[in-house]
Image 1 (cartoon, rainbow, N blue to C red):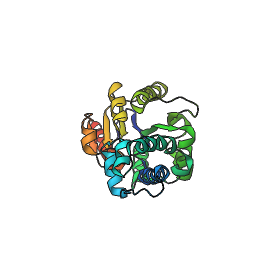
Image 2 (tube, rainbow, N blue to C red):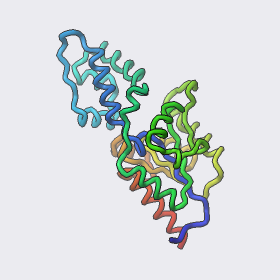
Image 3 (cartoon, rainbow, N blue to C red):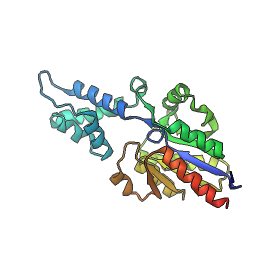
Image 4 (cartoon, one colour):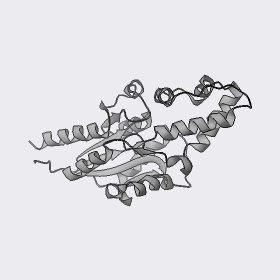
Length: 238
């Protein structure tokens, strides 16, 4: 197989391209709804499919709470509790791998792509799946860019560009590189640093939301992203 001589790199978010977080988000939704429910209050628990549709369309947490039968004050409490709970280790254990993600990483690695993960997870949050699924073979410590356990977060849209800037400054130069992600934070970060972006539909944003941020490509998942970048790399070898 012909390969280009320049260094190839794929930078990828973790949640969405690699980890399927839908079960975690739904279980936290159920937990927070139950915690905010008054005794005897009738609520309407959304199905997981409906809940995830709303999340992917960026419907605010308060509105999801109110659609589930909470009153306005309860919905504010629900949104706050959700933020406090969503990254707890108890629920992080519910995450699973996106189908085909491992095979895609293997294919990229075999082709010669340098792989790096750029994620808003904290160190200990990333360590859980890296150990469970033996992902260190793709992302050794020097190829992991995440939020420190004691670092103060602002918002993903503000923090992700800084995180990507750190990755680009610490990694060796690449002749061809791409950023894969599933949110507006990933796409805006890539654009801020002139890195071509690939949005995947396997995460927490739907096509309509992702299209607003003008990614270079929108594909189904990491497998499709891998096929795309390998095809692009091969075209340079001819």
